[in-house]
Length: 210
Image 1 (cartoon, rainbow, N blue to C red):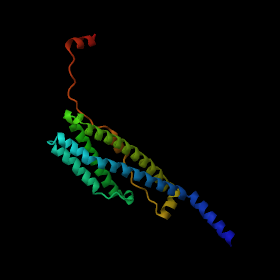
Image 2: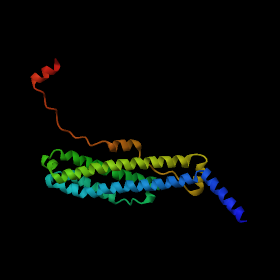
Image 3: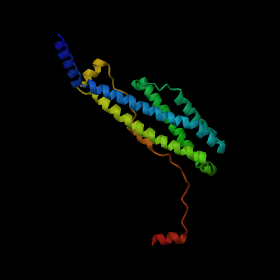
Image 4: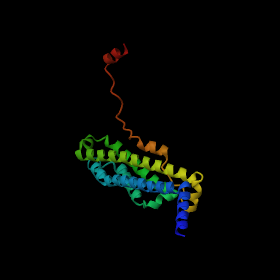
C-alpha cells in the first residue's frame, strides 16, 4: 500500500512538473522578488524628495509651482498602497504606474529649473542630492527591466499549452507589466536648454569654411 501511494505521489509530481507547475511556482516567486526591488528603489527616490525640495527652495523659492508639483506628486505616490497584491490588479497597477510617472516628470522639471540658478547648481548639498537621485533613477530602470522580463516569462507560461491548463487549475493568472515604450521614455535624461550657441568670430567662421 505504501509503495502504491509513493508511486502515485511520484506520478502526480511528474505530471505537475510536465505541465509547468514548477515553472509557474518559480516564476511567481521571481516576480515577487523583482517587484519588491522595484518598490524598494521607488521608495528610495521618494525619500530623497523632501531634502531636494527644501534645498531648491532655499535658492529658488519663487519656483513655487514646480516645487508644489513635486510635493503633490510625491504625496500621490505615497497614497497608493503598494502591496504585493497590487500587481494582480490591472487597474491598481495602472494607477501606481501613472503616479510614479507623474513624480518622474515633476522631478525632471525641477532639475531643468535648477539650471537657471548657478548658486543652486554649485551648492554641495544639491549636487550630492542630484547625484543620489541620478543613481536611484538608474537603479529604478534596472529593477523595472528585471520585473518586465520576469513577468514576460511568467505570462508566456500562463498562456502556453499545456501549462495554461495547470495555471487555470491552480488560479495562476497573467500579471500586469510596465510598458516597454514607457520604460524607454523614463530612461531618457531630462532635456536642459543651455540657450543659443555662442556665435563664432567672423574670422574663425571664415577659416572653418575654407
